[in-house]
Length: 289
Ligand SMILES: C[S@@+](CC[C@H](N)C(=O)[O-])C[C@H]1O[C@@H](n2cnc3c(N)ncnc32)[C@H](O)[C@@H]1O
Image 1 (cartoon, rainbow, N blue to C red):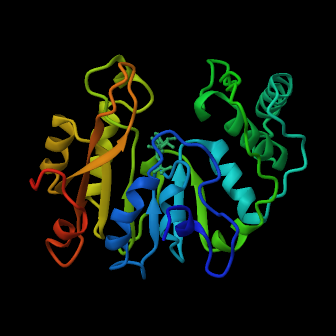
Image 2: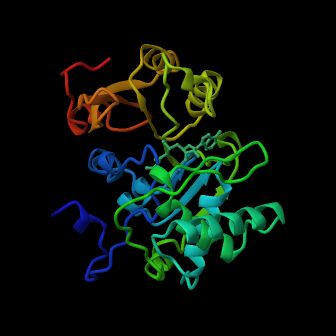
């Protein structure tokens, strides 16, 4: 089965993969997670930091609780659940991009960021802006510039998502506000721990990584958490009793042109039978910690 075929519904040809571009999207991790998930697919999938939904759309749970601190992506997903068709003009055009960006910011300022129009504009901005970034200035305005891509494929009809999302609940807020049931299967994918750069001080700092690991450790059911394999992340999850497994992330071109794949870890607990992950997540180094 090809990668894109995995995201097609049985008997259908329509593509229902992640609809947004999302930094740190884990589509590549889905084949690893699927073999774990198959043991737990009777459970509700909970993603406290669901991002662009690559994992939920890859695993297709019958029931899910999907949360993210970003209210705009969650608003967009809620509109997909209702059944969304976008009628506003969408073209790969700089002037139109800045008009739509200004209108989106107007809606946010007017407290109408949960509207259908805001959802449609967010989709357009996500597809058209630089690197699909989602950044806001100190006044709360979306301020990512036009992406200048040679071509962009805009989707206008999202009705295919309605049936898939029927029993998925979307919430927005900090991960610690997510109400877990003891039986839930939790997959947590925070922003990477970037230990040695200035970016570490940004949105999700070290204190947040610590709070998340502790919060996850209190969950009674199965948990998988992924992250960059920095020494302190390994120590943190080991400290809270998780098993760690190294995974090879996708090859990223860094600023020096190096294509070295990032080393990631999957920290797990409460999976059964014991040791299953050893066989499931193909190790890159043969080491399990
Ligand atoms: C690496 S991304 C998740 C990517 C996702 N697994 C996917 O495949 O698309 C991390 C997400 O954490 C969210 N986030 C950051 N801080 C958060 C917090 N305190 N609580 C909940 N979500 C948060 C970000 O908005 C971002 O969407």
